[in-house]
Image (cartoon, rainbow, N blue to C red; front, top):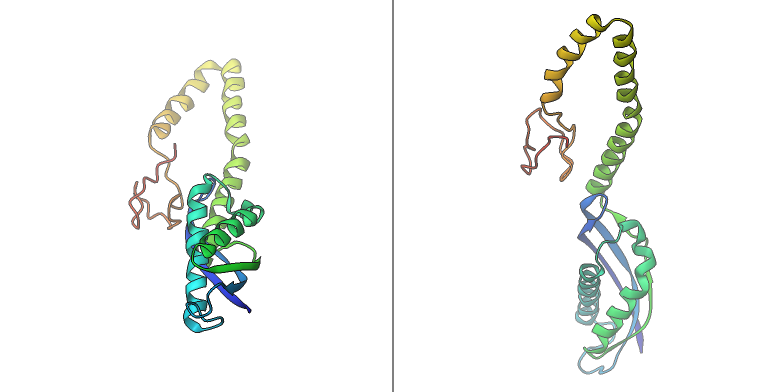
Length: 191
């Protein structure tokens, strides 16, 4: 007799672009107990046992997957199903069917991802401006060498000071103006 088991878990995930984030993975499993006397179909204990096994199997699969973006995890559901089926079979439960909800970051991670994307977009937009600013002194220097020398020397000390990030790249905390994150201690100096 097959019965439905819903599972859901928010787990830490090391995304190659966004680093440490938390993602939500959930879905439904249709399972049968191979030994109804051992695992009573549909009982609260059996449902909890199967859901915990599914969450464990997914976590173990993620660790072994290597560098995969959270956006690509929906293409890996087949691997999850195979590992879940194998783990459940070794515990006298047969996996009949599985469905997964879309993989999404939790709310705090979603905010952090949005900030990182905005910072990345801002740095891409800001990149052409310094190149244009560097080109202007060269043209001025050719026209009047004495006038161009003073601004270049005045700008040099500013470039020796480290530029600080607005948000912590590790935890997303708003920077307070110091060189290290007040939440996790990560260096906020742009490299």
